[in-house]
Length: 426
Image 1 (cartoon, rainbow, N blue to C red):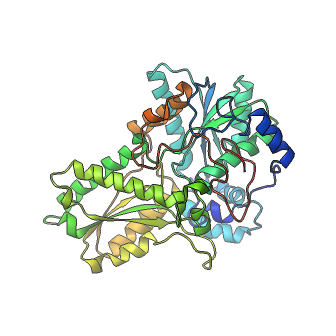
Image 2 (image 1 turned 30 degrees about the vertical axis):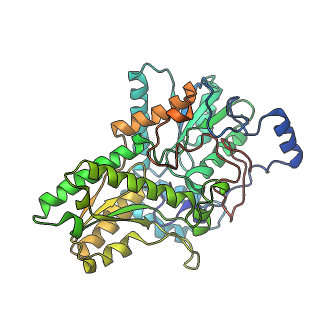
């Protein structure tokens, strides 16, 4: 999701008017031609839930949020994120202090350089010739530049990996809108075709690092706090980015009927259950496991707008009264240690734990964990090889998620449906 502490892109980013929605006549023409998905490869153009036809891609596009890389970049970067909202620099400076504290440098770009290198190494080790391009939404290298490079190198079929695992507007659909916008800006509509891998919240490659991290956290606590009762005196907090309730409720396909919190909350809860069950299976007694909660962080927007709760800091402050002596903080909604992890969890949540005399452990994000990197390549190969749905790994009953996003998926009620790739309209 975003790398913008305290100001979520779901709340303040206005989508530019880069294109118009499909007209009824265009929709009929597309339906008659069998091409229901804009800018897709032939195998995905008709909109199947899962594409089981092999596709010969030319390159992988690693797509991310972007972040500043120096003090002079901070305000221009924040202007990019908030473009169209007319937010004055004085307000942006209130957010900028998080970046200022780290020398004006967000860790996200360097993490993406490391991930790109790790993906390239994994591809090479498997003898797979697929170049990896990298483009961001809000800072260099930008998505249009990545697509221009693809065109200059003669690539026409791209498979995209967005650096977010879950379903919501900002973590999935906005990426798909950005791909469409970048094609428009570069004039490469009809020249480049862009598909995306499925949302990978329950793929073993994404989940395994969290299982390892929680297990290691339990071991650390038992060594650091002698005599602690793991089941009674430890709490596990699975933390993710809070989003407006209106967006959460509309996350995922409408026909799935997830209810309050939508697919976004359901996916996180399902993964947390898998993590705890796997850690329990690796210990002498699963009954000795602590309780866990799903909590949220990085809320922004007006106080009158409902967002997903409870806040991680509020929950931590309540734990001592429940007899809790230690807390495990799991950044379940994040793929790497970007600014919202480094500030909101490593500083604010950790400080809250210390203020309440709680021993705390923050579990690592996947980053460039070997299984995560391997899993991302496996997701690409699902599409390259047209792997049957029944053979695709998924650790929850919710998956494997869709290759082609369904109609009406992850609506943003404030911005409406903008043109988007890799999914059925709208």
